[in-house]
Structures are given as structure tokens and as C-alpha cells.
Image (cartoon, rainbow, N blue to C red; front, side, top):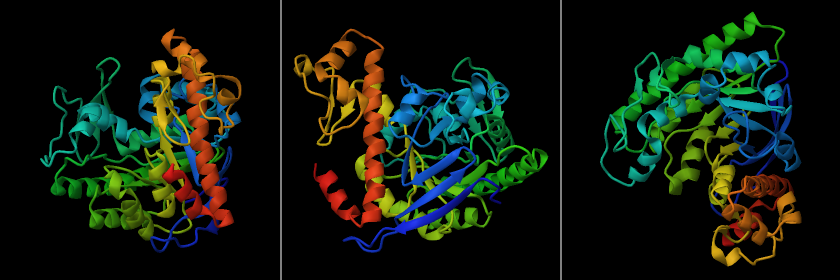
Amino acid sequence: MTGPGFAFEVTHRLVDGPDGRSLGRVGVIDTPHGRIRTPAFTPVGTKATVKAVLPGMMRDLGAQVILANAYHLYLQPGADVVQEAGGLAAFMGWGGPTITDSGGFQVLSLGVGFKKILAMESRTVRSDDVIAEGKDRLAHVDDDGVTFKSHLDGSLHRFTPEVSVQVQHRLGADIMFAFDECTTLLNTREYQERSVARTQAWAARCVEEHERLTRAQPLRPYQALFAVVQGAQYEDLRRQSARGLAALGVDGFGIGGALEKDRLGEIVRWVCEELPEDRPRHLLGIGEADDVFAAVASGADTFDCVAPSRNARNGTVYHRDRRFHLTNGQYRRDFTPIDDACDCYTCAHYTRAYIHHLFKAKEMLASTLATIHNERYIVRLIDRIRDAIVAGEFWDLRGEVLRR
């Protein structure tokens, strides 16, 4: 199904490590808006912006691609507005490769109070109808799609696989994701089975709609379609989902859904062992250092996560040895950079004391400077991982970083 302007090539493979056979690799994704060298981190620009940071700054800190959210852009300003502007990259003044998710995660997670569910997932109780305590259900799933209420104004909307693909075609990103059902670890095994089957059926419908729209607009740059592997923590369901989606001939794959953090590498490996070698694999919603090392070794190529920018806006910054809160009083007279080993603009020009002052004074610049640092930290870490695979030094780098 791959069209002109989109391709993926593996250039290097990770040598086997102390844990056994490795599936890690280095590669290049070619898109109509430029190349993405993998492994790569994908900063999240939910509403066509990485909060508090100019697109030009994202280029300066080494970002190769930005992911935006189909659900949020559908609600505001509307996919038709983005299309009229020339597509997502032009609308946000980015110019480089872009990705849009399908909206499935947001439709469902916002509809059931997902943040509260995350706090509940340590419980052993399983349910087919998960809803966070104190929340009203805003999303209702059936085999055809999802009916949901806007979190902005309560208006009623419906996403089907066809609608999701139509919205993403109008947004014009280089890579888009098939509509999928995102479950939680609280769902029962029986529900996970039905959800995997539903996601498979929705992906087939997405492929059909994508091919129809692509044929109808032959002069537009090709948009790649990735299907999302589900199955929670169940090996047989993960492998079943991966095999079924691979048979659809899509351009690449997302690995999503409920993941137990301490089993992340194991679950990613199950999936990647079933997926074709010549297609890229994107791990959705992952951006912590230990998770990234585990996922790369297990075969994931790209990653996205809101944590670097969200943490930054809350005053939490990354350091090669730890993370810490710049709002704490101990930094009031600390005239050192956030991390003297970091090469970002913030660390080159500003001190912890100054940024502490900005947060305490509620100045917007605080979020900007902290976000620049955090995004550069994770982009640079994955750049180092990529270089280490090529040089045969991945396992040494993993040991060094995780010891810290």
C-alpha cells in the first residue's frame, strides 16, 4: 500500500546483548516532508503546537517530526481549516514531517476519566465497563464506532474508522493512524478479546477508506497509514493482533493500549517478532529513559510522549542523574544551569535560580525555558541511542544512563 514519497529502510542492527537476542535497529523513514532517522523521539504538539515552544525552536533542539492530535484538531479549529491552510505542517509553521493519531485514544480516555483510571489500575478488580469514580461516561463504543461528547462544550459527535481517516486526510500529516479501541488494564480478558477483534475490523475499514481517498486525490502527497496493535498484557492477543494487522499491508504499525511498565520490553518484543521487518514501528505514549532503552532493544523505532513538556510546565526538569522540581526553595540562589552536561539553549544561557524565579512569579517564560530543556534532553538521549547502535556501544550506553 506504500505510495510515492514514503519508504522505510533498515541500515544497522543492534548486536545481541546480555539479555539475549535483540530486535533493535537503526533506519530511515522517508516522507514527503523530509527524512526521519530512527530510533527517534516524536514531540507531541497536541493542538498543532508543542506548548510554550515555537516550531523553529523544536527544529533547533533536534526534533525531526511532530505528532498532533486528530481529536483535538477536529474539535478546534476544525480539520477543514487546517486543510485550507495547506495541511498540518504549513498550518503550524513547522515544515518538517508530521504525524496525526486517529483520535481513538482521546475519544475513549477523555470519555472515561482516564487519568483517574491510571491511579486505579493497581487494583485487581476487572470490569467490562470501566469508568473512573466521580466521572460521567462521555464515550460509548459499538462495533461501528464511538459516540462521544466534546470535552469543550458537551456537543455530541461520532467517530467511525471512515470519519477518522477522513479527518486525518484533511489534516494532511505524513503519517496517520488507523482508528482503534484503547482499553485499560482494568478491562476483563473477555473484553480485551472483543476489542482486538474490533480494532482489526476497524483497521480494515480504515485501509479501504484510505485507499479510496488516496485514489480520489492523486496529486496530493501520499499519507502513510499505520495500524495500531492492541491486546493489553496478553501475549496471545498481542501476537494475534500483530499478525492480523500485518496481513492488511499497511505502511507501518503503532504499538498502543494498556502496557504494564515493568513488562514493556517483553510486550513490545512479542509484537515486533510478528511484524514485517521492512515496516516502521511506533510506540505510542512512551518517553521515560528506562522504557525507551527497553523498547529500542525490543524493536521499536519511534516514540511519542507528552511527559517532557507537561513536566516542564509543572516545574519538573530532567537531569542526567535525576529529575527535580525547580520550584523548590533550594534553587532560589542556585546559579548553575539545569544540567551542565546539556547542550540546549536554556542550559547555555540561564540558571536554576532565574527559572525558579520565573515559576514563582508565574511568568510564561518559565514554561518555555523548561520545555526547551526537557524536549532537548529526550531528543538527545534517543539520538545518542541511535549513534550507539551504529557504533556497537548501545549496551554500554544503557548501563551508563540507567546507573545514573
